Length: 387
Image 1 (tube, rainbow, N blue to C red):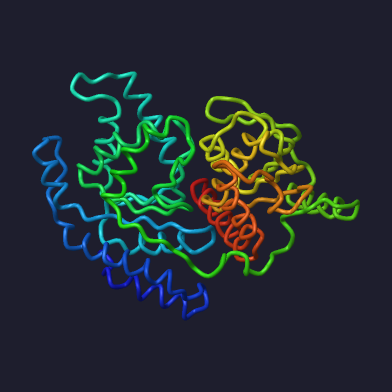
Image 2: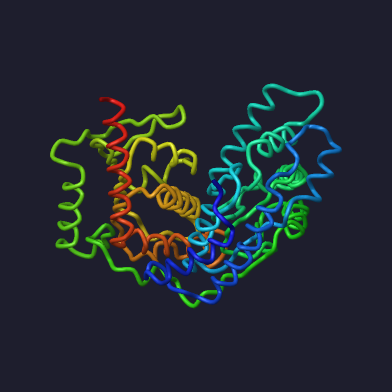
């Protein structure tokens, strides 16, 4: 049974009354836009079934409501609003996914499509139709385009999906016109921006402050190594997490490749920063690791400069994946989160603002408790399957 669209505002107000979120006028404006979309989706829920026939595309376009694009600084509650909307959205064919994961999956589909060519449709069109057949509502968290390979296919891909009636709801740190700002061959990306702005209502979530920063700190999971005492405290915490007999220098299988860790024990893995962010790994590799481990120990994170932006980019992807999968992170560093990346220009500098905010939240008791519950549920499920 579908939730009623009106429940979105009621659920937001209930969370605020319970003290789980802070009521904010900017967020309420976004809730109003999302509530209106929910009502539109409910009204059109019984539309025509997806077909490959092009005449249907013209009908689908006229029936599809405009999506919503929420943007604003990090920690303003955009992801919370997206989750509330997604849970209450009154249809079954819906999907919520982090943008990096969606694009990794899309490139895999394109690879398969190119290996099996179709005379009638090019690979991008085929993949767009496949995606449109699977979902009517697509919710992206952290929409950010930094890759030329992504930028060049988005207009064609979403051109097909929007014509097929797919509705997009997205969160981002930047307004649409600043996506892929300064990127190579950005002119190839401009048609997508024009298409996006026609298909979504853009809402700025200009809340008063980063709500993550006010959360109570947990027992230490982020250690700034300033002296021998701090180093010893970090070592004791890491030893506690790994247990007395970890496997040393394990070689882990990730997407058909082998990468080396410092140690592993059960669902906990230990890396040096150079192993996990100094190698040519990507978000899909980090996502694969979260299928093997619930807790990640990363040691010796340095203060990075612009010249090391590739390592900064990988660290951003790692934190995004761990945060999105609610995996625990224990980090040792020579500096505080705000000082981990010293560059003040480029896409990585903007993305790193989100990383800093997320690192602060990942130190909170609420986040650590959530990770513990997730790990326990995984253990319970594994025990049930083995019983």
